[in-house]
Length: 112
Image (cartoon, rainbow, N blue to C red):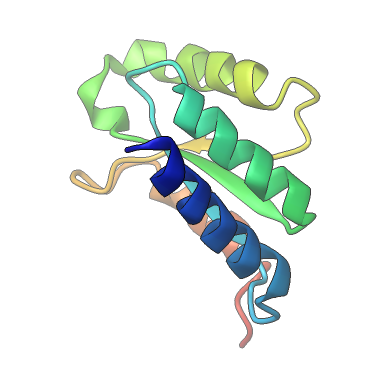
């Protein structure tokens, strides 16, 4: 993506996050298999700047050894959110594992 396109996308994201009143929670998806990219970090900064509640989902948790999931999630959280005030959960959309913790967290934001 060119610098001009990045700027346009950045302005769109800012407009959406800062002016959309219906947003009650941002779910930030990140690939558990890789360290956050510069684009991931940029998106994270947009999210933090919005002041909205956020949840980090480390997706594709089924692609790494189950014994490494917790340590990998902790490492991702330390890199993106070192103060640890944003919940970070492993998740697998393919195998539907780790979903209980995520749904328990989401229940707080779902209007019933």
